[in-house]
Length: 114
Image 1 (cartoon, rainbow, N blue to C red):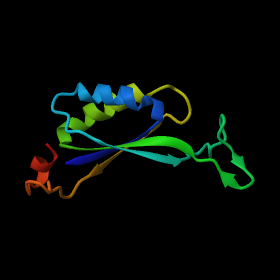
Image 2 (tube, one colour):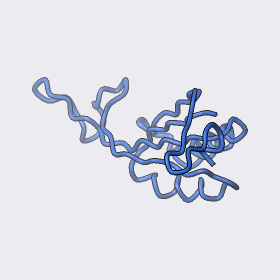
Image 3 (cartoon, rainbow, N blue to C red):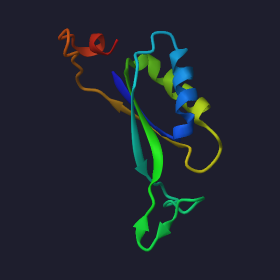
């Protein structure tokens, strides 16, 4: 089991969501608003460091728990759909999941993330 965590630009969320829905047996995802900055430190565009205060750039965090076989397809779909070629497009991280439990049914492991 893996977790795919993607940090993307907010205006790309709808198109990424639609593309992920097209993947057979896509298990679902959690979406959170977040803020931050990368190596550009918020220096581009309207975001800048002003008087020692950092103007954090709005982003969206997508978290997806899935079986190992789906990871490459999900990552490729996010990269293809979220890409603009501009600085700040985001990042994707893949983590191993040690354990998963569905609270409603007490299912464990991969059964819990289907």
